[in-house]
Image 1 (cartoon, one colour):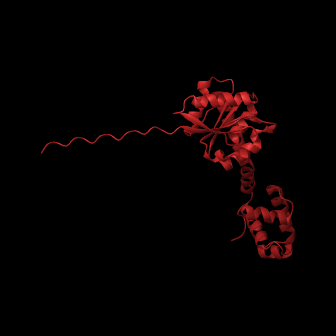
Image 2 (tube, helix red, strand yellow):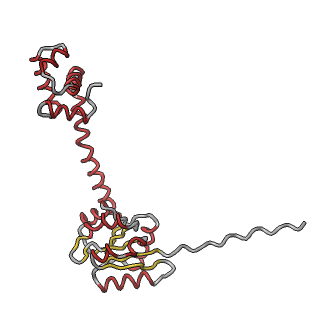
Image 3 (tube, rainbow, N blue to C red):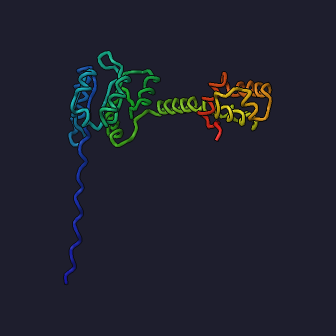
Length: 238
């Protein structure tokens, strides 16, 4: 039998163009961006534009976009305030295109969900490259700004963990007897001290002295705060 011919390779389908939504309140800038993106129809296309918050929120194409190219100054509205809403309304990845030189503000844009930040003075080809990269799940940041963003995130994480670390250090300072007292108080927060003292096998005066030390170590003021602290940190009696 004659040898069968090898199967023909499946044709590679071209990727669909990136659907871009433009948010810009300067007409000439908006016009230029639209012409730039549409100059390569096989690569990208503009599905919608908005020049104000209201027109952005009400535009039906917002939900269809792959990438949203957005200025931070929009008809008197701070684009940073719009980012959380935009990200709830659309799955588009946000590329901030701005003339702002405020680096702290640019960092906040990333912290609020933008995937890229670039200056309006960048060459047109770089803007297209940034749209490509952001659409594919990448980030677009200049190295120095990336370092600042990472530094801010690291500092924020350290600040968030500091209170918990401080509480654990306070708890670690309790003796076994003091932990026993905290557990007993948390189990019966309304009992009189003399009743608790008898249950713990000590005098009321000794219990008061222990409590003064416990309050100081844990940074609480009185039995109610101690009860709340114990419940939140797993110090209640079993």
